[in-house]
Amino acid sequence: MMFGRDLLTIRYARREDARVLASMTSALIESAVSQRGTSQRWGERRILGHMRSPNSMVIVAQRRNRIVGFAAMLFHDEEAHLLLLAVTPSERRQGVGRQLLQWLETCALNAGISSVHLEVVLDNHGARFFYLGSGYEELGVMPHYYGRGYAGLRMWKELWKDNM
Ligand SMILES: CC(C)(COP(=O)(O)OP(=O)(O)OC[C@H]1O[C@@H](n2cnc3c(N)ncnc32)[C@H](O)[C@@H]1OP(=O)(O)O)[C@@H](O)C(=O)NCCC(=O)NCCS
Image 1 (cartoon, rainbow, N blue to C red):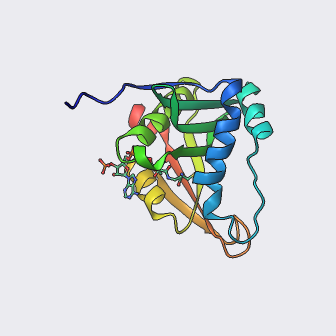
Image 2: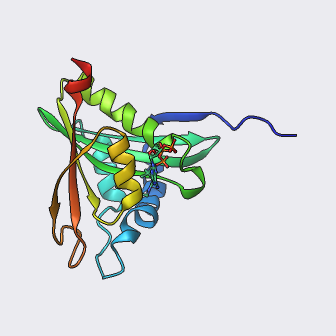
């Protein structure tokens, strides 16, 4: 018999999540640019640093006891920078990524921040569609942003536009 899916919880990341988040970052985000020797940029220690920083927020989406997605944002005075966002492949296209992003955007908005910026690998078309559908605009291409031969695309969203 089929029952509904387990509830999705979004919560702040905890110290003990750091190792899982580092390995998810490596497998789900950095793998797209690592074939040409780019070393891992997001280790456990760096993620822990953002969990502890008053200027950053790291959140996870959890189903039962399993982390199925996560996101990290850095807050400046007037703008925020989305550092990481990933959802495990079996959980994609069910709104997990959108919920994580909206959670952080709401925090940014409540902190008086007017825009969110991010970079994405230029040929990551799935993520580009996701961000475009979430109200982001493409700002410009940065050649070799992720290493030789790997261009990045900068995107941004004006938060106040929809909320003023
Ligand atoms: C990008 C990512 C976070 C999206 O997470 P997700 O949970 O699948 O996204 P959602 O289910 O919330 O998608 C919301 C909408 O975005 C769009 N979208 C999401 N993924 C898409 C894809 N691969 N292709 C086209 N549109 C997509 C759709 O409009 C979708 O709504 P729909 O499913 O009702 O059509 C996920 O694909 C991922 O983890 N990718 C690998 C890591 C990555 O690229 N991170 C971003 C750069 S750091």
